[in-house]
Image (cartoon, rainbow, N blue to C red):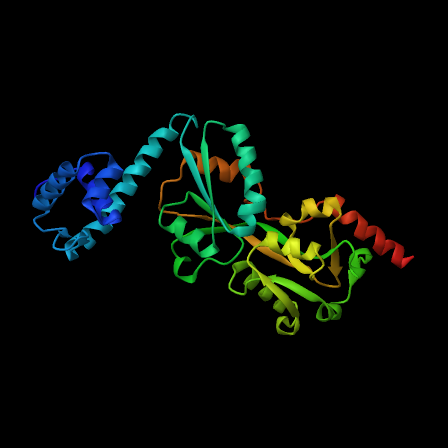
Length: 327
């Protein structure tokens, strides 16, 4: 077996991705004859054909499918090596790639990225907001430097990833400003069964976590009146403000609405709903300096779990109502 080059591997992967020699050539800005020649040389070096050229589309042979697995690994290692060298330049370049589940990625991580960018403006940051499962797989496959999730790591990945609870997110019951409970500090648990709820889709991680937490507090979720199921936190907040129901929403997502007074928080007697926020990293992959700095400086509480709860200013009205009621 003869040697082959990284350029040949990149060309091979491009053809596998596009299913066409022509489109691969266009994506790499080289001529189609050059692509064909490099593939022929690669096949000669390996001693086996990698593509079935009998049809209109370039289909991988069994040898091609096997080689693609290793080609992806080789190119990933090349990318890691470049980033490792770039990191030696004292955070004067490079890119930090973060993945986060919906709530944390929408409401929490952008603030942290802002602080990171203020300190290290020459480091690029990519944030991918996706499901908890996709975030975990992104870290496992080396596509993300780190992931931040509000749900559980998929069982099949728990042995491959390092997970660390760095904070807890409070889930608050909110009502619109004109709701009869808007001026009430605390309600008994039993009253939950009298309310009309707006919730996320049952398949969402946040919904499953909330249902589990409520269940652990002896709340029969099946007996709650779910009037509407929506696909995003923003849609739920809008629906609550419109008076279509009440909802349990992450405290990180409602700070602005509480400050504006369009939503009001209502405490439930004996019920504190919190979920862990987990930092995911890959223990066997190179950790970039940018990732290390983000984890240690921007998440300073990573070794000391704390609650990302409502600010004191958002709590004061409820506290005053409670005290007035006691008087």
